[in-house]
Length: 403
Image (cartoon, rainbow, N blue to C red; front, side):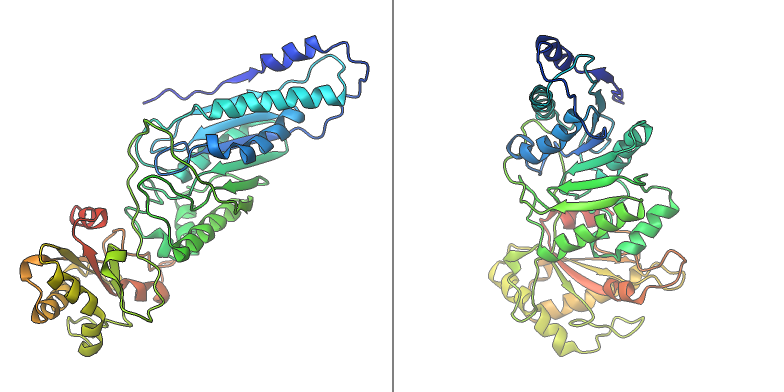
């Protein structure tokens, strides 16, 4: 395990400059309330690097430097432990406002340049845990004015909010946050101003997040921050650029493409396609379709695609709502067999199709369908009564088969 770096240090650059400029004639030393400023820095794979997006970060650092506060940071990674705190001490010499601002700008530039050299050290991403770490640093500060700046896209690939394990972005955010609260896993952000930069922005191999999921991502994090006692603002300025080099692995999160449902889906546009109760509804507790004709129409794009690409393979996965004590695996598997038979009857080769029943077990397709008090949330339960057709070579398919 990496040693947690927790260092409180005075900026020698500030003191040196103050001594050199001590002959100034104007001696106002005008400053505002000190600020304890903490950063959650996504210097990791599949997210743009800091160097091309430093201005918004610099502006916040400059505020802390001007008012002799503290600047700390935590690095976003799979096992977040990298932290550091810098204390900006006031000179004992009388300086003009102009000289104070000049020193603050130089100190801010030095800190931001230091940020640009940081890198994640462990694979995957746990943004929630990193925010908790940074929040704890803020809580330990004796400065009353506290601000948290998150520079990350908000996609977690490990931990409690892992998008690879749980379908958190399709789940009611209140259900998710209720669960986090039950586990005492919310950060302590009471009275903290939170600025989020780069939410939903991606680089590298990560698929661009569809608008619907991006909206859900913002709603989820807003709910988490506000339920944790913080006040959040999202900076909508796009964060772009290349990620840093030499970073540890971060898995790609796959999303279904947004679709108005007015035209047939293009199979090549997405690796995950959902057949819900609107297109492929089954009779309760049975593998028999309510409307076979509607289901056949829904799978027509896959019939044509697979017939035209005989080497292409798909995984058909079934999920169920959690009702009663059963796991629903056998029922969901039988329902995938019904869909498989439709495809074969339409001319698709059997060897192109693999099936898996997931039932109500935890996986990246299923949403949480029970409220914190244990009652069924019918809106979420309806989302779980589904069949998914997934391109077999996608990371989602590989993840589900290893579940």
